[in-house]
Length: 347
Ligand code: ADP
Ligand code: MG
Image (cartoon, rainbow, N blue to C red; front, side, top):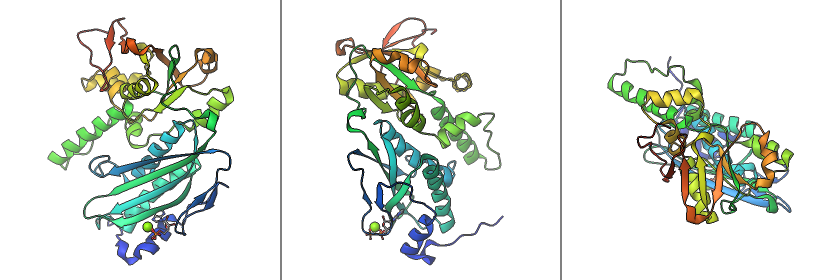
C-alpha cells in the first residue's frame, strides 16, 4: 500500500507546529500560558518546581528500523516523566523540541506526535511548547518535563542513611533483553531482507523496550496513601548497579545488595539464558527499565511490606564497607558500576 507523503514545507513552520499540537488539551491550572506565545508560563504557587531535560539522537538513543515513530514519541515523554517521579514529584508539563531532516514527512511527524499525545493523555500532562528546526541528517529530540513537588517531600539521591532499606519497584532486565531481540532481528533482516522478524512469544520483553512506563502509580497513589517518603530515590535508566552507585556516592554510604531480592520475571530469566547471559547481570547492567530504586527508614518497613510491586533488595551500610552483592549462593562480591558477572559461582 502506497503511503501518503506530505512534505513539511507545504505547511510551513508555523502551520506544522499548529497542525501537530492542535489536539493537545490543557489540563492543569498551573499552566497559565501554553503554546503560542514567546514563552509558556506556569505557576505552582507555594510548591517546588522540578525540571528535567533529555536529548535523544537517532542512531545513538533510538533506531528507527525497529522503533515505530509512535512508540518513540511515547517513550521519549515517559523517560522524562520518570525523572520527575524519581524526585517524588508529579510531572505536569512538557516541552518538545525537534530537529528533523527532510526524510520526515508530515505523516511521519503525525505518528511521532500521536505517541507524545498518548503519553500526555495517560500521564495527565500538558504540552506547553517547544522548538522546531531542521537537521542535515537524522532526527533529534529534546524533551523537558516540569513538575511540582512539596519541598519537604522531595527525594534526592543524597538522602540514604546507614541502616536504611533498599527497595525496588517492578521487575528488571526485560528492556535490555527486548533490545537484544530487536537488534538480533535487525541483523538478520539486514543480511536477508526477505526474512520476517521472529520476535517469538516475547511480547512482554519487547514491550518493555519499545513502550516502557514510568511509576506514576507509586508517586501519585501508593507512597502518599502509605505516607511514605523515601530517604533517597533514583529511576533505573542505566541498570540497577549504576543507580545504586549514584545513591551511595551522593549519600556517602555503602550498600549490601541481595541477588535474591532483585525482581526478575521467570520468562525474562529464560530469555537471558537463551542469549547466554546471566539474568542478574541483565538487571544490574541492562538499563531502560524505568523502575524506581529507593531507600526507606527501617521504621517505615511496614508501609512497604504490603505495597504492591515493591521488592526489598538490600540495606545501606557504612561507606567503608563498599558496595557489595551477596549472591544467591551466599558469596560476597564487590559490585561494579557496570554490573557484575558470575565467576564460577553457581548462584
Ligand atoms: P519562537 O520563534 O519565539 O521560538 P516558535 O515559532 O519557535 O517561537 O514557536 C511558536 C510556539 O510554538 C511557541 O509557543 C513554541 O513553544 C511552540 N512550539 C514550537 N515548536 C514546537 C514543537 N515541536 N512542539 C510543541 N510546541 C512547539
Ligand atoms: Mg522557536
